[in-house]
Length: 279
Ligand code: GUN
Image 1: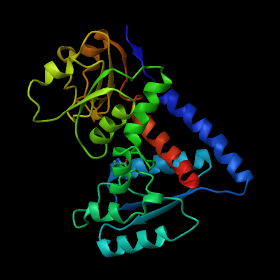
Image 2: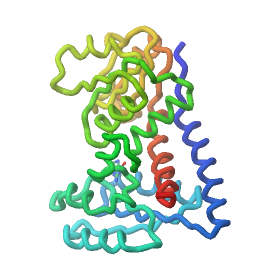
Image 3: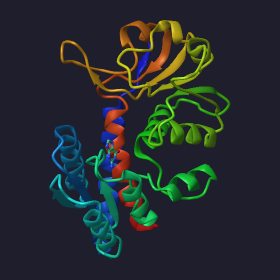
């Protein structure tokens, strides 16, 4: 039986550690605050934003919520970011994505000061990661590294295949695994012989966005499998990009969905907020 990589437990542990750090900082008179901006009221975004606010409250980080109407203009949002960039009492700025179609997401991300870019989406943050300099790292890939390390899964020298090349998950994930001295292959929708490539992986990280796509045919015996996907199946139950029942008997360790990668994203966001006062 494969070991279940318990993201809920690791996330809870990280949040406890951060809570202690934040309490110590408070004693030194240092407070941490995160501005969370949501434009419009997409229900999924509202759930994510609420979870972020709750995590802040638990850890002792002040969250300043901005719920802006769908009609907010790009100029208005840019000017709000300028204002938050200049405020000494705001350490982190998070603009929940996706934004309404009339707003250019890249323009918004580029306007956030890299010193307050707790999502790690700014080109300067991504560039710093690429060349091994300090900067904020995108939360989901950073969470996966924390999950592997805290479960004592060795990365150095391992064959790692990342499926997916998004700016938020696939690309930073590949860079982080490279930084940990894995041999990294990035596969994507145009990759030929995906099964053969995945079968080389000691560590397979799946961010393909298709429910239960990865079956046992893609797995090397004893591999570690990390599932970034989250979907609702035909019975309204949550499932990942990996067909868990098919894959689990063939791997040494695997993340469940829910309770694997998902809880780590918020834990790492909180970690970035705490780091933001050190920077
Ligand atoms: N939308 C979905 N995931 C994220 C995230 O990690 N950060 C932001 N800002 N928006 C998101």
